[in-house]
Image (cartoon, rainbow, N blue to C red):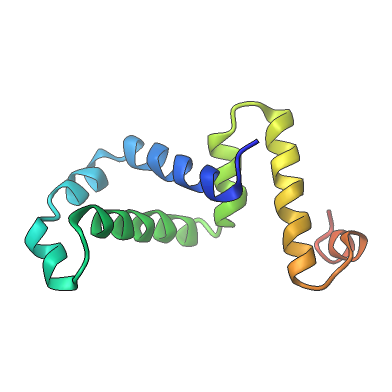
Length: 107
């Protein structure tokens, strides 16, 4: 099972592949554009790809990790386990028990 971050990266790549207009814009980022900001061209493209994907997720009112796991994991059983693992981590970060988290979020 991948980490939530790995799912996010994979889903972002899938999203950009499905939207060649965004990828085309990223491909136009020059080395000079990156140099002005003090980063590498690759890093600037990565930053902008994250911004594009995050804007899409906000517009759709989607949780980035949940959406990414669902998009990037073809095996439904593995996806369900990855989502539960992510949500348990989220509950723990909030200082809640799994049961409290499930009740609060109507899971």
